Image (cartoon, rainbow, N blue to C red; front, side, top):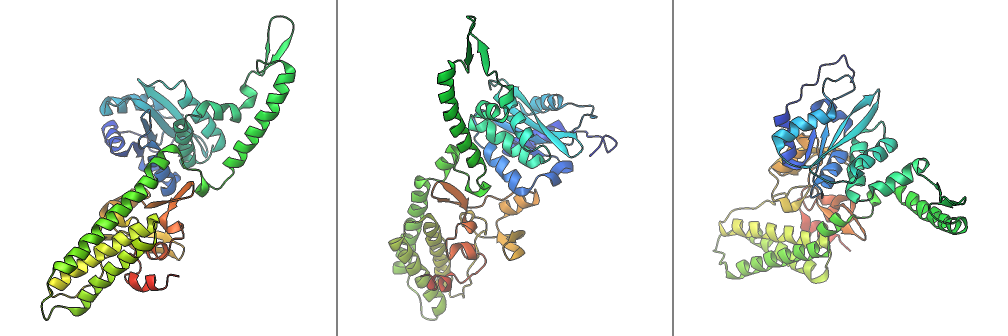
Length: 381
């Protein structure tokens, strides 16, 4: 973008409506500079943030007639919601910056400090700079990160007024010992930052969302629906002439779900058992009506979303392919957002289920990519 391109004329009401949806607005003119993964990360960080956070990515630059602060003022009038507004905009050729404006929200200047840290780390990557800004701010450690990022800006020597000097407010011998300890802490922090993004330790919000309580809830649902299927099988009278293969499929899925729940407490297996129970219930209904049955694929991105009603392009290890999904996930992809993919806890991290190595669920998309789950379960050690 440059100053001689089409002038940016924002629609504050439309931006406010977008922010009211999920707290994030990306103007189409800058969408190509933000990947779906980055957008998904920003949206997740904004969700439930305290204080409330809004993120705007817009084609503003220094030649624009409107400043980031003025844009936020116009949007705030429409949205009527207080909080911290981060605005990502262009600051030069291939360079971006995020500006912060807060309304009736006390931040102790940590919103601005977060933007300085993110800008220094990712000056040429709009999506990553936005993600880092929100991540640093919502972590509650913006001031600490700023001081570590810009140590030269900190006052290290102060006069006590009696002719002596102190380092960091301490006598020199004490400060030297503390300095060594601080160096160790900084080294640990740096090493942690160099860990791959996929292995980032779960933050408190994620731990609350993907926790043992959530796994227990998934298992409870699987047990409830499997037991209900068993009751239906026992109570339902299959008349002569009904489809025997479909009736057998209902029984097979019930037995497979029961066997999984008997031998495993894993989150992935609980969801897999739930998928099997629902397939068995669908097969049983077809058998009762004397109809043949073909398994219905659940949403590839998250089987808990229910049956797939459409398809969407998605990049897999085997290449880009159309995968079955629900309407909501299809809309997310259409907006260049990562859909709400099922995440599973793995130790102290959380990963998308297809990256968790849980089989046969990961490679089949819980049956979305390979309808015959029973055969795949038979290959399980």
